[in-house]
Image (cartoon, rainbow, N blue to C red; front, side):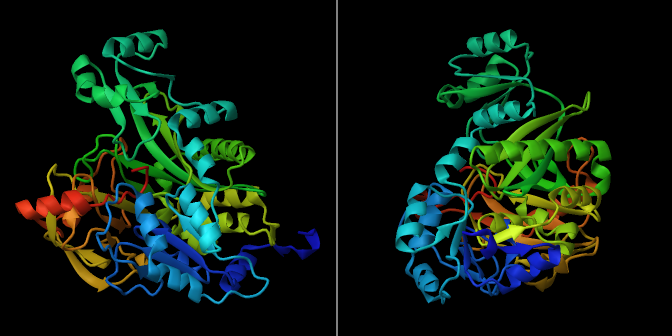
Length: 500
């Protein structure tokens, strides 16, 4: 394409107008719309195609494809195959009037594979506006993440990567690398702490030995007292745009059954010093540059770990996708006043556009103003280790916290931004009434306007109150023998952030 044919956007107002007038359709195909909440307000032609009816049919830009239980879902990719190949989805895609000369309609996935890429390209004439799946899978490995960080000058917690076949071998490797006796072991791939193991003795190793020894290679780290953080960014041909820095809540027993499991975030100014925010910005840009050199384009998320003993900032994890913090990032006060960070991802995949916006100025402005106000999200998973059926679940919408610690529905709906008072929350229900609840299943996400964690990363009193109030919105019953057989054949995991 000749430079003269490019549409140059100079300001935030130009970007807003461009997406308001856009002619192509963009389909977000995923179990729920959680990760891309509110994007329909910014992008003309945006459509969510989801399995879960989080809004009871009330969301105008969500097409729900109900589960017909004709297949077993073992991963989010399975769900996306089902959604993409359903007749209702194909009819909706065919019905969109494509303007001659306009850019092709787009598909977006939280998780996808090579076959989904082929179906989009060859059968539906959709552009997958994401890096190639093969590359995504490559950089998604915690082993590769560590190597990318090392090359970019962004160090991880002291570690060694090796195959482990016994506790004695693990001890020997740790001694050679001066990692100490208290260790954290991670597989290359894993979700929300399920493949992160904390090991300080032979008994703790024995409890998970079959999982560790089954891995071709694991990452063995020194265990540090750390505070988790999360930040999203977007690697583009104009540079790497960096979002607001968030705290991270890990392993709260009231929310998740996994000791290393992600279960919430906060966004507020006092959480981090100005110097730390600047260091995170610099390191995130370095990772973004390294990813772009590998051919990775667009959205990604990084977890950083802050050593509570000496303040050292370490690279924790790379998620090469939109993630479980995408909603809170894109609905932050700064991004609402400017533009959601994800719009830069869409611009990167639009060859008709050039961007004259100053990336450095945008990032510095966000660093200084991006933590204005207070917002947080809590991710409630089903914690018991038994199958049940949901007999009561909340409607998605705005709730008020009552004096007795319960939630009272103020208004059902899909607009998180309508809940702004300190005693108000927006509940996004994931697990509906009548669904099977299984160990680790996502039940609901609660968005509030309060600090919900202590400085050392535990739920504070307010967070405990919100978590308890949300949990009490659900009720369950045990399964009959016949229902237990049915759920073993048909239940499906729906994970929000990591690889199932």
